[in-house]
Length: 382
Image (cartoon, rainbow, N blue to C red; front, side):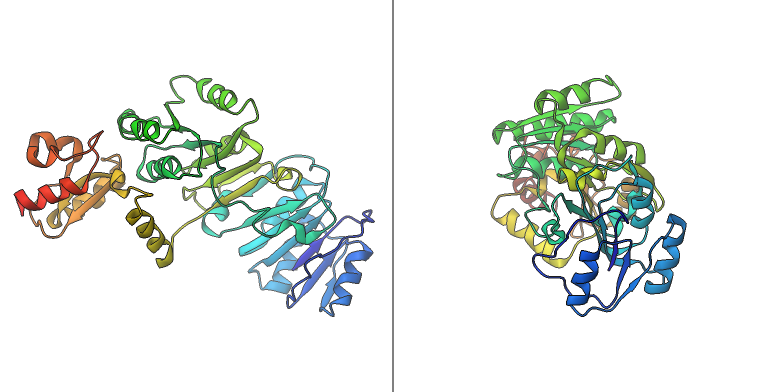
């Protein structure tokens, strides 16, 4: 753990829950109250005062072999440049806890890919209790119930899943704004998910931000009373869109980076809002077996409809073609390969009326794949 403070700060800080026992604690320019706390715990610590931003990396090399600090605590953060330099040294799955009341002097340049791939977590609070930043109360991990969500790049397979999940989640967003610049994907979003939103008593607006640059910010302002979105999910790996998404959310909002931006994708983030207003910046990559089981459980409970993600089907012989189609973005959704049908051609569900009319009859609204359509496929073509 690395605790960094301000030489002039005389705040009496505390760990209300109790400081765990890291193997090493490094203290930089911290007030006397922090030294006392560490000594009371009997923890091994070293002082490294007066460091410049350029010297931070040497600290990481010496004490972590360059892996980075598991936990960095910044007391009374003032300099965005200093916080940004320290944030580069957070270890994978590590945290930065910012405790203070005064916003920093600017935005923090941060590698967005680390939120997505390394599960870096920023947290904070405005009290003198360092432990108050931790726990579920300060670290929301779900869409805000009844709130406004913006899904950027929502027309791809992953974006559609986010839109669908927000609609079908009983305690999820009440209003969803989905953006997409591809005309075919835009139409799929409208046909497939606007009726679903209406059936669930929610509002879904599908927009192409290229058609009218002012439409998206106007909609966000309208449905948030000018405060900004509660949740912004970015499904395209573009730093500019990620930064714009951050600026679009309200002070207590959450930014979710669901697209794998290349390593070194730097963008400015208003990290001050993490401790002054409890804003959240998060991302994820990959999943566990337990996560897959959770999806299956929700599907069986009819709380989630994975069939809506399907855009095409094909037989085993088309597997290679299907992979290439994913790369090319040929279909606006997922592809299901049926090993039982070796020679079944790869086709989009919107082609099925011409190629497989008996199966097409069983498709749902917006040409959505259904269990009945799958049964018809096996009945007529196996």
